[in-house]
Amino acid sequence: MDRRDFLKLSAATAVIASSSTTACTTLTKRYNSPAQPVSKNEKLLLKNAKLVDVEHGKLFNETRLLIADGKISGILKDDENVEPDKSLDLEGRYVIPGLINAHCHMTLPGAISISPSALFAYDRQVERNAEECIKHGVTTVRDMLAMGTKLDKLKEKISTGEVVGPEILTNCALYVKGGYGDKMVFWGKDKRIKRVDTPENAREAVKYAFDNGADFIKIFQQPHELMMPSPPLKTMDLKLVAAICDETSKAGKIVAMHQTEHQGYQKAVAGGVHSFEHVVRDYDLTDEEVLAFEKTGAMIIPTLSAAFGLAQKKNGDKYWGKGNMPWMVGVRDKILHRMLDQYLEPEFAAGSRMFLKKYADVSSFDRKHLIPWPDPANFTSAVVQGTSNIMKIYSTSVEFGLGNDGGVPFVFPGALALEMLLLQKAGIKPAAALKMATINNAKLFQMENRIGSIGEGKQADLAVFNKNPLESTKNVWQPHLVLKDGRVVFAKA
Image 1 (cartoon, one colour):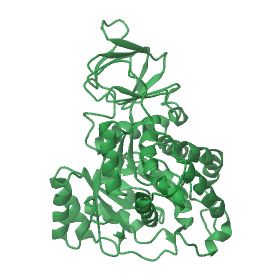
Image 2: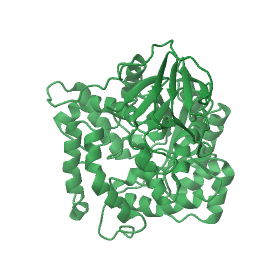
Image 3: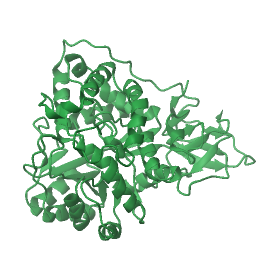
Image 4: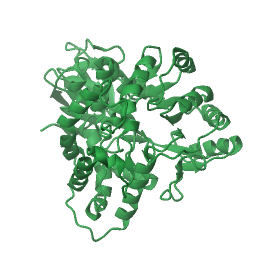
């Protein structure tokens, strides 16, 4: 979930980091792609492979892929003749299209750590976010807003090859005065966020967004802060929502709405939103409300991972210990600290450990803090009530995409496999979760003719795994090999 205060906190981190010259810290070295098996104009054959048909949840009969000019030029059986310049024997491993993260924040650190050394590490952490996507098979992401100028720099570094990273889609966020997204003092003149007041200027803002290169529109419907205390926020009225959605539809683009409470869900349904972000956590959706959503033809991105690190015990919380909470806490206890080291710069990992130790103290929620302090009830309710609502929606024909809110505290853009695991525990089969993370996301982006599945003429964005990802989401945690535009960008040592 977007965290207004965490966004401000991270923005402050970026501003200070940009001007910091005296802080000392240990930064990791930039990741470099391995040596390429073929030159740009040569053909590469992946042989002895088990090719996964993500659309139908089964394996192809064919066992070989021919790659040329960055695209899949052939899906071949063993007895079909082909003359590649180089062959790679995958030894029976499983090949899927590159994973797609439909909801993340590439320029947020995924940590809570405020110190001169951590601030100095901020820019490197942004690069790490991109690198870790590739190392974990995520080849395309939809960025949901953070530091726009930092994102521009990251995209430039990826395009020039200075940083290894995924393709990044960007948005323009529209907000109302006094609402979630307002008072972001660090945005400056960022072209990716604009305030709207009337249906007329909302339509103009949509046109401005697409004239300036936005891939989609994001809007907010968050009536309360997610920190402690939780003062009310202004929200868009239905006329504004409808005007934005209508103008965006005319442009052939989509509107994604941040909504975590019942009133936001209702406005998204009535206003014509195309992509519902997060889960309704404050209300048990009725069958009629779920049916109304189904009729819109919209998609939903649950982002169950957003609650993974911050669902904590608080006195009087009716959701603590219910539903999948005990299981999730058990998984977190086993893997979170290991993930901090895997995805974060050392200073961010160290600071996050300090925060988590204090946050685990139930008495911390009865005290005031110098930095925004999360209200765990917002996250426990997402785990329990939110998951219940998601499964109600899943029982209909509503299409699901998949994103993890990577960038918010203790969630990382490359850790898409965790989101798939949480969905599997909720009751969604691994093959369905894999479909969400590939072709469904590609359809949401209107890019299904280019990415999201294995097909002739499609971009050769591929991830190779040792075990069958159709059988368990645990089988997509660490790829053996990753290709982006036909180039080998990761190979497990």
